[in-house]
Length: 361
Image (cartoon, rainbow, N blue to C red; front, side, top):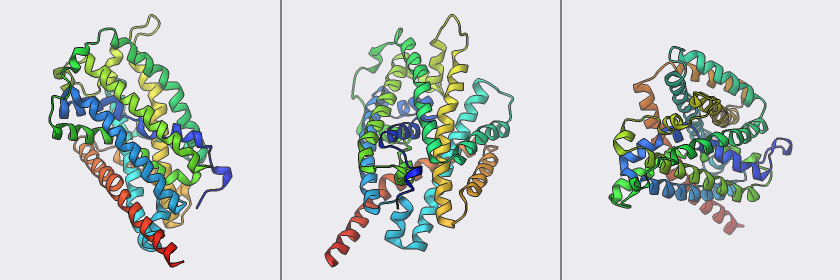
């Protein structure tokens, strides 16, 4: 079921939603993870992961177009009202846990780089207060935040990529393709999670004014983010040696040390502060998906489910260390199995059901 036209957005804005959902804290640290899998051939894995996400976008549009609604409508069409909402509940939990994972990761960055003594509950409360205000304004406000998260930080990202290239060693990338297939597969798997987030489309699809016209903008969004991740990978690989990259937790943030401006001493402070726009927009999108879905499942007002999710998020942000690693591990597994395995199967099942109904008619 499509949303009211007053709450819908133009098709071209899907480009910014895709960018917002894919560019989070992952781009600040994924270079070290993928390099540990396939060395400096890992940039090829990033391109391959981008191609896989393009296929996933096509699958989602096919699935949602057949159901003419969101993922909850897909489940109720196939499994019925009770079982369909029960299955949808777990996907809503995934959206919420994904937002918590992003929040915990960004709080860690703030504590390490800017405010080491500030408690996690203060940072999480301040961020989630802004997110709650944003989500309460409705989906169109979230789209506006996604647009801002694209416009302003891009200037800083371009500056960040220019300075390291002055002393880059492109010979680091040679020889090409000197790793095994399994190493490349592990690199692709890690890259897929880093550029994940497009699955939010499963919830905001009914809020697109002309979904078919927005398909090309969704593919362009994935193409742009794949290009951005690839450039970030190549810049990091040509600047750091492999041994340096193994011990650098946030390679892209470490690149800010190369930026020297006469009027600015600590560029990383500006970079992290501006990056808060991206993080707030991303958390707002995931929390909107989760609270919107829980509203449809339990027939409760969205502001109550949103408030509950924010309070639980603040509590979970108290945990760190092993909890953060465990959460990331489960989020990665849920992302791969639910969206890249389950959703294509769901498309096949729905296609057979629709074909069977047409034959009966």
